[in-house]
Image: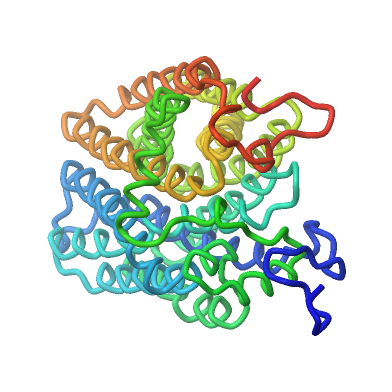
Length: 461
């Protein structure tokens, strides 16, 4: 204690609350809300695409629809790259707010579009906002997560993406038939009106970012308020371009370079599946002979399965290891995709779609949980950013590939493409433990094993 009775810099505050889900609930809830709207915006396009293809005034073809889906992902790629500079300038909280504003603006542009070019520009703008949001939200919740609950926390956060996807489907089913597809995109402006005021008022800044910016007093105050250990310089992400370059170089240190490449491949496959399915599932099912309403409902069902999957995968990964669960989930996704290629009774198809949702989305999220165990605290944001950023190429490739197949009337081959992506993702993530060398001499911190449960296996076992 100092002479004033206050804890000195870097010293623990014995009066802080315990570090539990309850103490950090406001942070988790606010990040959950932001990612909810992220999922809603991403899935709106797939929910209304059949209506847009049937609108002669818009002039959208299957090929251009797939290309536009890719433009969204390209916007996300550039948004993720820009997020680092914006975070240095504004901090994580303000960057999250800016991301929400940007993808809401993109939705408004889409609602006003008179042709595919303007609509594509709106989706690109939305992608710029979406690109930085997920890695920033993940970095925030992982920093605030209780010890030993990183995978579960990640699953809880990403369940919001699928709740948003279900909301998008519900809005599409409720508004598009009567009010037209434009009304659905006007609903996509709501995040700026709902989430932004709440984020500005209640979301704290990251203690690690505050420390990196030289504000030790505020960093310690936020950590004490939420029951976190006070950040140390080695845990703080380096600010500025030089700091980010150094963090990216650290990803290719001898003990992690091959693991980095495998994580990128797994993320590529995972996001190919996530965005390929989110964009094209209704149209693929319609081309397989299902009615329009049923085809759109499949998107809601698969996102409902995704919510269940997040809770199941998070708990399972905390117990058995994120690598094992992610690899198994990728393989089961491949099996589900192949089953959907078959002509099954409607009830069976709904069941297969729901189970595929349980596996598909959480397979990708567990890649993020594995990332948290591969890199040090000071490298976590860079590692997550690169894994999600490189994965965006898969997010662009997936919708484009299915669009190209749809243009030739070969949508059914899309299910085969999804199955191959699932198998490749399973192989890549399963090899991460073999590729990662021991970090004992690399200055690993106690937080490196954050996903490990007391008495349980490491997520990399």
